[in-house]
Length: 334
Image (tube, rainbow, N blue to C red):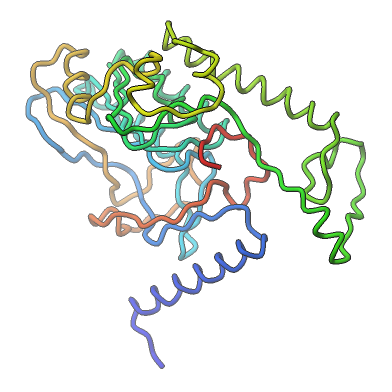
């Protein structure tokens, strides 16, 4: 039987999905990142609305936040959230007509290091350009998503937004009891008592748990410091910083956001902060060539993808990259 090119693509994608699902079910994968239509770069300007010489850049932050590149169903490298954001900011620096940025955040968070690096890149952009920045929280801006909201000079949340979750987590499974029942035992060789503290073959000792707790406490304090630097008067910090999430009105009452509003409200807020009566709202979309930065994947694709042809990438994502190993996470919903 012969398959057309489209048929071969669908067949290959189906096999890739089937294999990934089988491996994940068997416990062989702790992550999955499959883009059936991978995004490409660099970026070209697309007008969304408005008019005028001055511009407001709409910058989306969507999905699980990572510093690791992924792979498409066809084996192509796809950029991480960090590389994507840096590419957007690099393009924005070159356009002096961009006077404000609206971060459109819809994310449960992600890797601690990735969230912190993106936050620093956004803050550096603000310092270097003096551009006003507004964070618009969409359906979800939790943990690392909330962390990135803190770059906003103003933070808006939709009435139904779920936000907050100021905390850090690391996932660890203890399958030792189950494996013992089926005759499997750990026979690892290690150089020190704490070398295997994250092993799934055993339960952590109190001393090992204390080691991780100290690390997580430091990361939690970093998160809290970012929030308190941006939000000077957080109400009831005991509950605000214990990892729980809030609907928008509750977050507003705790001063975790500035107001309740929608994306058009954030655009108007950005224009007001920038001193603009009118502005053209733009986005940067993928172009025909690859735009590389320090965070880009080692391998790059040069052909035009479906995304640059006007098609949206179809993504199936789980929170960890295959090659990431154990991760400290600013994430909610695990």
